[in-house]
Image 1 (cartoon, rainbow, N blue to C red):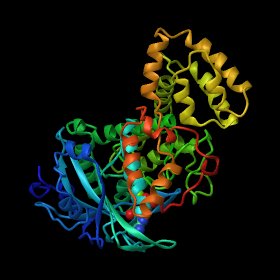
Image 2 (image 1 turned 60 degrees about the vertical axis):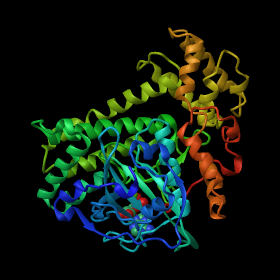
Image 3 (image 1 turned 30 degrees about the vertical axis):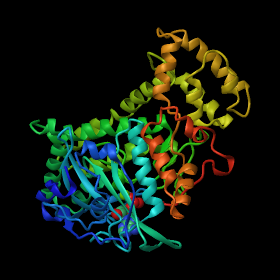
Length: 481
Ligand code: AMP
Ligand code: MG
């Protein structure tokens, strides 16, 4: 459907007025289109061929029928400390469309100016942070991890001040839900229980509609959020993704990855890696993520106490650890090409992580190389500082593979579909950003192609498939990234 013929709906505005505030986007000066996600446009049934109309749409200038713009109100625990009011400070919701699967997809402009919740912020997003969000959300989707996505990104001549003058940019983000743990915390903390219940009903309808008719639906809602969060944490750990800002306002009740900031894919495996420069106590280190997922769920549970008996919420939480481990075991088993896994495999996996950590092995390249392992160890041994620990672990692996029923050929085929050749490491994104800041967007296009198909060979992009150059390994980024 042509952009100008689209009719937007706004189910969130049916909630009580405390849940949001209306706001108009403030367009950027001299906007230009950087990239459009045509595959996503197809699933949203949006015709994006008119680039001028698209640019104006992303810049908040082209107003569609049914459009009623608003920012959502939420609270959140930031680095463990409760902040009673946050909210969309630089994101403006412009309405909802139905995708090809008849699912409501909420469109949001990130960087379109101040809202009631901007506090001291300018409501803008700079080019580098927009490129990071645009590419990374698509990369997560390409890896098969549920996430928000982005339909298009625009640049501009609009000056925005951070440490220095930069250029403003807007990403049109898309998600089946923007409800956060912190959205519930806002109403629980302010004792607005009517709104809390309305929000719970809304979130159930949006995220878990099969619960609508359940007797204890709020209890079941929490069970679902717990399960989805446990799965997401296992996915992040297995793929080597460090989110960096796991505040409760950055946790989706749908259990999908949201709000891309100073995230990183691991370069050399390091369980203690911290990608966020401001995270002085390593609260959101790579290895802490599953525990923080649990901590955040407890904060959500507290917010749900007016709706669900405390003992019931606590009972749900007792399942988190087991559920997380089950998902993680399954995902790691697939990465290792094991056709069945049991709790006995944890020791063998622990040994592997210890080996990767001590030998400073590139996490992604290790599994990709292992996906072609046929007993010949040369390529794998090259990845580590020393040979002995890798040899010892491979001896164990050889024995473990004997329990497989699948052939080597089948194992390789499955592993190559499970272990990506490419992940968007920060040094790659930085190169694309450096070029973009000079007005050259070719690398954004290239990295987008890799993001959409990380398991493909892409011979032309081979230089991105190797070890991260030493100078760029395991670096930290600032919160405004
Ligand atoms: P984040 O760290 O991106 O999750 O943001 C935390 C909170 O700060 C959210 O409420 C954001 O909307 C808000 N925020 C971050 N950057 C800005 C900005 N430049 N202008 C206004 N609000 C912002
Ligand atoms: Mg956020």
